[in-house]
Length: 117
Length: 115
Image 1 (cartoon, rainbow over the protein chains, first blue to last red):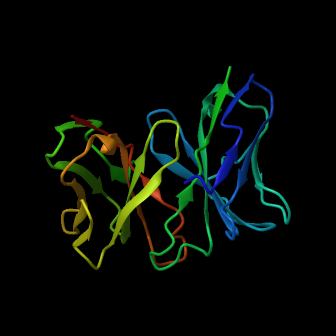
Image 2 (image 1 turned 90 degrees about the vertical axis):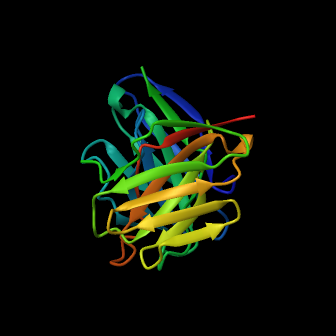
Image 3 (image 1 turned 45 degrees about the horizontal axis):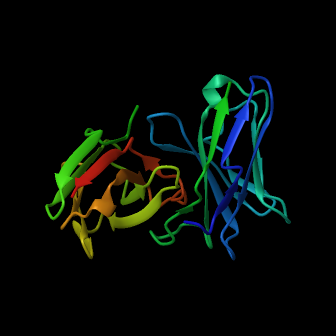
């Protein structure tokens, strides 16, 4: 679990500001997945990225949210003009290969808790 | 539309006894099921999984049972230990078809094991 590094652990933003959440995958992992957990809900898939490519963003809200995983550096989940409903825990997971044939269960980081005031 | 349901928000058991956590699903396309354990302020940790071609998978104190006809699975922990106290999430996905990273989670069950 400690292998996937997320920062910051806690982030407070006022309505209308931007939030940037960072995720460094486990060493040797080139597949990154972002999930969101709203209060008293289960985790929900947002986006799947490989280096420099977005593979599946079907879980991303259509506006204000974007994600990238550049060739160098961590993956970034960016939320523009945050609203109170964006308050949640955002978890990143990584895998060495696409999670295929039931292998490589996702390894999650400890999350970033975003609070919008 | 909740496709994975954990109807018990919480469960309390005595140390040494069996803990049984239940999970129901509605999507018949799900063919792979996982249990994750989560401590406060940490991320979910993979615990055990089961493919739909099996009805039981065991790993030490943890056993997962799958009843496909009832669309029901359960996690048994025996004997339960205080360190097992955590939130347990049931998750499912369609392993075939290429979207097997897209887990659908239940809302979780808080297990408390009393010494």
